[in-house]
Image (cartoon, rainbow, N blue to C red; front, side, top):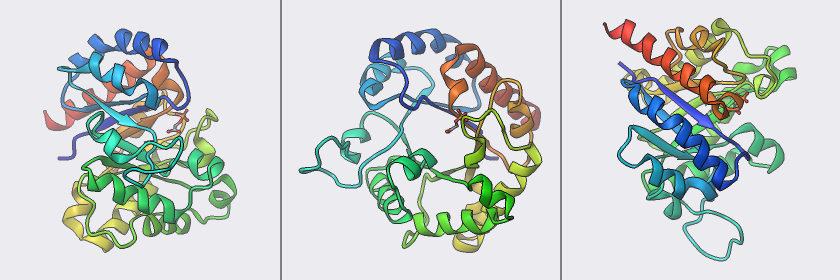
Length: 256
Ligand code: PGA
């Protein structure tokens, strides 16, 4: 059975002291919930402090981005080597990076490779725009993003995929559980064709886009959906704890 995962993407929010405060508020509650992967992805500058705070707990850490070179004259960038001993996961190809920083499939592909090389587990984001969704092009778009990002890679061990329809991110307009389940099922099929059924069955695929405490169960209850990548609601202690608890309870019911 795939271990569910709830990952909180804090995006460009919190100063270092605010991050420390937020983690301190979540720590005890989150640590107690088991049978599920709980990941927080604070801004780069807070990773070291958050790592200290979460040491010895069951909370895992992720970064929100990575550069694909190991080191050198790339002013302002953060390399895989710098992240490797700070966190376990890294979000790659988030739609905000594709949109505001011109990240193409070629770049996400290099980033996935660079992450895997230092054993960071990529949370690779894919998803379509509203007009693409309305034109019935979701599967085509998602297939294109997957094949570009995974081009030339043998099975990327540790890979996690997040299906994030762009029209649902930060808009309060989430997909329905059924819609997300259908596309995630399609993503699993695509992975199965590329890497085989066994690998596809073991791959964790998350849903992301306006997940809150009020709708989390609708997604996590779906057979193809293995958890959520949470933006806005991951900055609110009650919301995030509730989402993680809901996922853990569903997991408990399934395995119990
Ligand atoms: P949101 O963001 O939950 O605020 O919609 C999700 C994401 O961008 O990962």
